[in-house]
Image 1 (cartoon, rainbow, N blue to C red):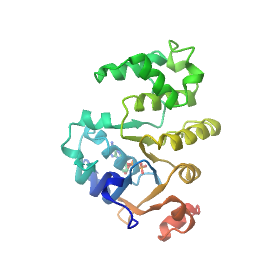
Image 2 (image 1 turned 180 degrees about the vertical axis):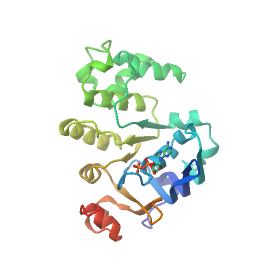
Image 3 (image 1 turned 135 degrees about the horizontal axis):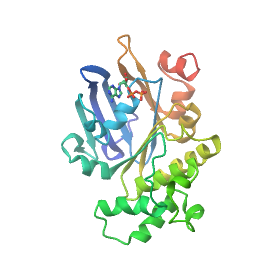
Length: 258
Ligand code: ADP
């Protein structure tokens, strides 16, 4: 980290995080700071713990049986492990690999979440605002009652982003959000991610190196060690990591030898 970094620039901080499933270690010893209002990407081969670490950031691993997490994570300076999981998930939203809108109207996809969370403002206004922030409003403003499953894949994923940001979370986690999308839909989402950075912090797992290079300010490279346990190998400013990685394993991955 550069000497200019102060703790107020850091929204999420992981210290010595290790996760095991049913006693089998998945990822070990991760130390990582996520910078506020920046995009951080997690890259690396499959099975090295990228999604596992992402899920720690909104307590989603809590829902998996037999999971054990050690280490410390802070969210804006608070111990994330002792906050209420529902409160964490309001502050840290998530978008998944496959678009997963509810089989309801476009409008209800956003309105239901607002109501469940006790939102007291004007729901119509917040639905419109969320759809605008997700760059979907112009395409759906005349079909808010239409079933969300009738939208294209790219539109469905932008709807899921709108739903995830409707409660104004501080962080948006994205787990390979474009792997089911075509290149044009992917490009729209890449541009959207860059624009979201003005309002919140994004952490994205991606297999697509072009996407990581294009959208992210910081990149963390994950791999597995000799015992096949995941670890974070290198973290840096995306531009520098892609131009001159410090670790041979990062270089090999970026240059396609892994
Ligand atoms: P990545 O996102 O880098 O592909 P994951 O975090 O999905 O890696 O997985 C890391 C390791 O943890 C893998 O060995 C995977 O099989 C294991 N794992 C992930 N999720 C579960 C789960 N729900 N139950 C058991 N093992 C899991």
